[in-house]
Amino acid sequence: MIQARTVDTRVGRVVLREGGAGQPLVYLHSATGEGDGLGFLDALAASGHVLAPMFPGFGGSEGIESIDDMEDATFHLLDLWERLGLDAPVVVGLSLGGWMAAELATRHPERVGALVLVNPVGHHIPGAPIKDIFGRSPSEMVEDLFFAPDHPVAQLMRALGDYRSDPGQAGALTFDMIAPMVQVLGAAARLGWDPYLHNPKLRSRLWRISCPTLVVRGEADTLVPTEHARVYVEGIAGARLEVVPQSAHLVPLEQPERLAALVRDFVAAAAAAPVRS
Image 1 (spheres, one colour):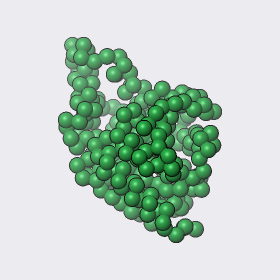
Image 2: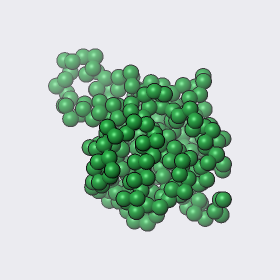
Image 3: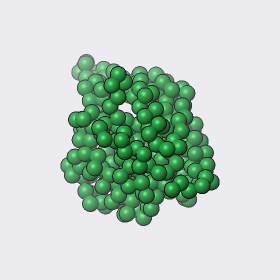
Image 4: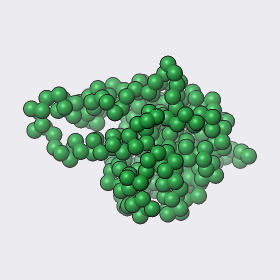
């Protein structure tokens, strides 16, 4: 069972969701700040030790004012690893979290035992831009994020979009529903405003990633074009691509069991494979 606690870090107190026992696996969330009640984490915790930290500025975690870019973010992760007693865990990252995981694995490859990148950002590809996440209303982004239009989070995002264009619907929402979305976009902007959701040097550094790597793409993801997954697969030695049907950008929300099975099988295969030098 996943439970929440706090961990003191150099930038402040962060919220950590944790559960299960066995091989440690760290989940790094996307710019939506998903985590609470995420069935994907519960599924993984049935067979391993899952740790899902909320990045500073997300979900009650402190310290975003001390983080200006991905370099700061990777140092924060290293600090977190040390405080949690982690050596080289499996790291699963979604979107912004995937980019963060890749940055950690290029800069400190010895601290990542295996890598799963789910619809990762991190690159600028001419002709295949990542759609805007900062200037659009929640309702305008629903089709990019969700394959199933009736997903509960998709319905909430539509309601938020209606609220922005029609203040008369304010009674259907509360401040506690709106404020977190505003806060997480502000935190994400510190990492991905300019340059927009990428590091121009990351592509040339992917060769440094030495751990087994799985890249996962939601088949219906229209937020991040498929070319971005290909860059990771082509740039990381031995990386392979899996496409998850009936899912868009937020695969852990739409296909939690299917994604968890992919991760479990990948981790088991990676553990049985010869060590790469």
